[in-house]
Amino acid sequence: MAALTLVVGYGIVHFFIDGIFQDVFTDTMMWIFTRLHMDTDTADQLYGKLFMQNKVMFLCIGFILLFLLFYNMLMKRLLHYMVNVEQAIDNIRNDEDEPVKLVPELKPISDKLSSLKTTLKRKERASIQSEQRKNDLVVYLAHDLKTPLTSIIAYLTMLDGQKNMPEEEREKYTHITLEKATRLGELINEFFEITRFNLQDIVLAKEKLNLSVMLEQLADESYGVLAEKYMTCQVDADENLMVDGDPDKLARVFDNLLRNAIAYSYKDTEILICARQVDNEIVISFRNQGHQIPEQKLKSIFEKFYRVDNARSSQTGGAGLGLSIAKEIVELHGGRIEAASDRYYTTFTVWLPPFQQEAGKRRMRTVRPQGERRK
Image 1 (cartoon, rainbow, N blue to C red):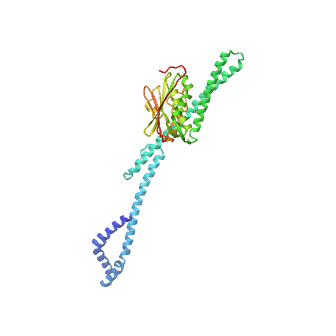
Image 2 (cartoon, rainbow, N blue to C red):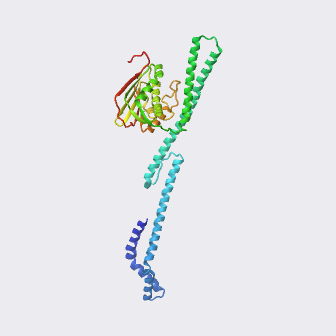
Image 3 (cartoon, rainbow, N blue to C red):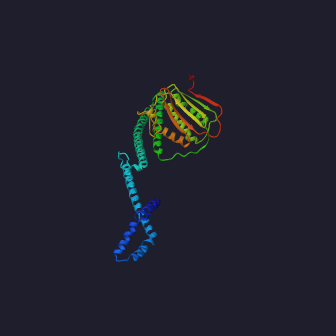
């Protein structure tokens, strides 16, 4: 503003006041003085005292007035811009479908507001969908709680009422009751998962951790679940793959990936857990043979409360939180997780930064039910 005032003011003084209009202004003032019955000498002296001696003051006043004029013009323009931006913000706040439009001079701001509106819309839709999934799952789980509980009460009532029941039948019904009670416990745990997911942040307690050993232990502990579907699990990992991580949280990630692979695998197939150090990353993959996951569902598979199968089953139905929590834990460790699926295999891959130590020899181990031959 000051620079503009100086430039324009200098131009006015140089080209007009001291240039084109100098003689005109002087002649006009002398004519006025002479009309007031002054002689030429008196009029000339008065002109010099009023204008020539106070020229600097008049120039300063002129520059100030010019500055105020420009300032007023600029403020009006800025106020116009601000009103325009305010209208655009109201457009976003009122959830209108109209695009954000601003004057051409504010196109960068218009683009940013349009991007903000799109982002807010997307997050709002995601939040609504997530809440709807959560509500649906609560309804589903509440219904599923009733089913095993009703069975448990019925079998226990029968066992309690029939004292002379044959031992073989009693053992059979007791086993069924135990299975129903186990499933009931799993459903209750899912309720806790839903409740806790948004109520607490995941805090890591990092330490030096051997992933090779952890993956082998994980496969060993899954023997019973594998045996139910006549499956095997092979661990193919480099020795001494060390990371700086939280053992409980990472165990939760890999246990979830393995159980997910078991749940959605064909019977009598093999799950391959592969772990390698590639350049400056440790790559862990879980590969299973099962139905192909459609491409559009792969993009949403790590969203909370999202499940690939729309029809829940008592065997694979879960809260849809496992993969979402796994993704959060992996990212807190500075890594990433992705899923891929084709007509033959589904693979979940985790990348983690390694502890500063080189990997050694390769370890290979296969977990299979007793008596089963490797195919």
